[in-house]
Length: 284
Image (cartoon, rainbow, N blue to C red):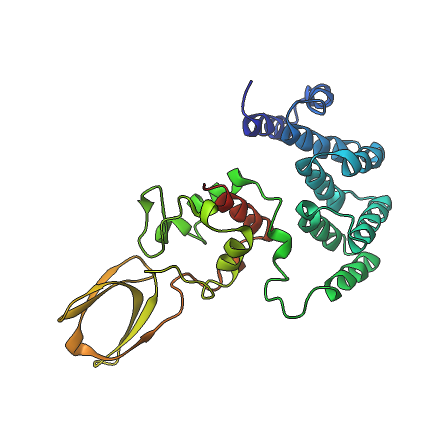
C-alpha cells in the first residue's frame, strides 16, 4: 500500500542490511503490481544469482514494460558473464534494424559501453555513423524519451550543479532570471525542451533576452533586462542579483547570449538529462 518509490527503497535497504529475509521477498517482489518494484527485484535477483539471470533478463527485454527493460539493461552492464555481451550484441543489432523502442536506447548504449568489449564498441560506432551529420542534438537524442519524472523533479529542485530553480520559477517559487516553467509541457514539445537544455542560446523566451553593457570604467555587466528609464537600466544577473546601471556610465550596449549556462549538460549524466526532460514535459 506504499508508494512505488518507498517499496523500491525498502528493497534497497534490506539489501544494504544484508537481511536474510530478502531472498524470500524477492520472488514476491518480482510479481508485484508495480513495474518499478519488479524492475528493482529483477536487478537484485540477477546479481545475487547470476547463473540463473540471463533467461529472466532476456524474457523481460522481450516482454517487460519500459522501466523493467531499462533495469534489465542496467543489470546486464554489471553482470560478469560473457553471455551478457552476446545478449547486448543481439539488441544492438535489433537497434540497427529499427526494432528497439526509443525509451531504452540510452540504457542499451550505456550498458554496451560499460562492458568495454571491442565487438560491442564496434557496433556502437556503426550506429553513430547512421546519425544525421547536420543534427546538433544527435548525441543527446537518446535522452528524449524514457525518463523518470520524479527523478527529474529532484534534479530540477535539488541538484546543486544545475540549480534550475535558482533562475526559473515553478508555480511562483524560484528565481527571476528565466521564465516561469509551470505549464511549459503544454506549450512546448520534447524536442524544444531538449534543445533548450543542450543549446540554450537557440531559443530565448520573450522578455528574457540577455544584454551586455560595456561601462566607461572598463567593467562589463551582463544580465536579463528587467526595466529601464531615461536615467538607468535594470538587469538581473545570472547569479540572480538585481543591478541598476546609470545610462551615463554605459559606453556600449549589445545583445548577449542566453543567461542559461551553455555547459548545463556537462553537469548532468545522460540519464539525469532524460529525467529532467520527462519532468518538464509533465508540467502541464
